[in-house]
View 1 (tube, rainbow, N blue to C red):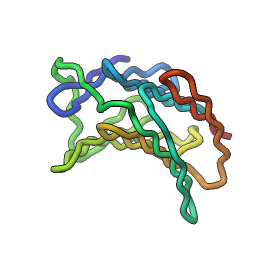
View 2: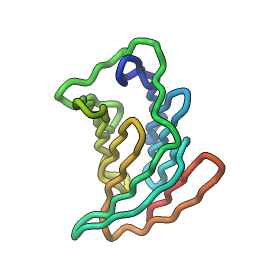
View 3: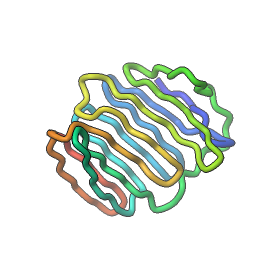
Length: 142
């Protein structure tokens, strides 16, 4: 299933392949698998923690550049379901972002995409391993 979802004045593509959700534009891609997250166009990351959660902040090399094609779906206040993933679109005067609430079979709780950053929230007990290639960051969760 392939859909265009609203991003600013354009759209991002989403594809669902069984349990994997892929969101991409011309200069960005995010692949959400149950135990792995792959981010293209990254420049660095850091990890933060509180009492319950671990947060991974991934910084993008450049802002997400949407496609000029109009969206098929414009999420409103209620989440849009794409497979088992819930997607909420939010616009503020500072930025736009998506909150992706992941299904229970993934090893992370939710992902937030802003114009220049991706945030990942997971249980503090989860172990994370990172693989860095030229433009991609691969996060393995155990």
